[in-house]
Length: 84
Image (cartoon, rainbow, N blue to C red; front, side, top):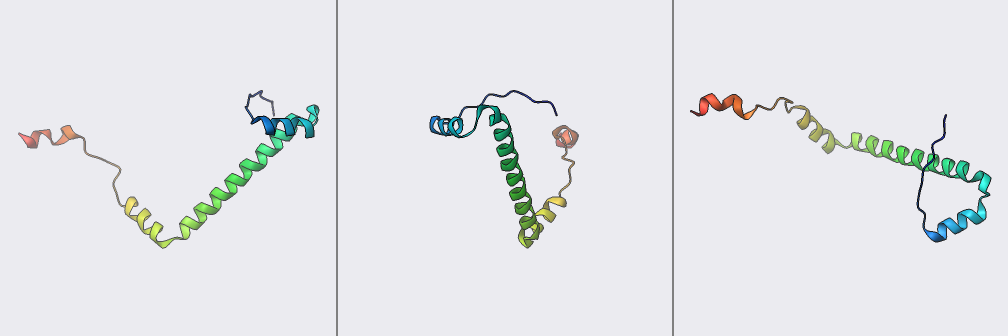
């Protein structure tokens, strides 16, 4: 996969620790791996939250109420002839 250069700002103390502990040749790989891990964890939490919500009977009832609503909303001018 092609790489893409990006610019980020880090708090000074974090940037200092990062540059001291991670060799320059490994920094891009290190940030990419950390970002991939963080995004995967966020996706996992989102999936778990959705699964929990899907098990909640109250939320299922609300969802069914929304499913019963029609997508078609009458336009105001459709009833204009009856207003005269």
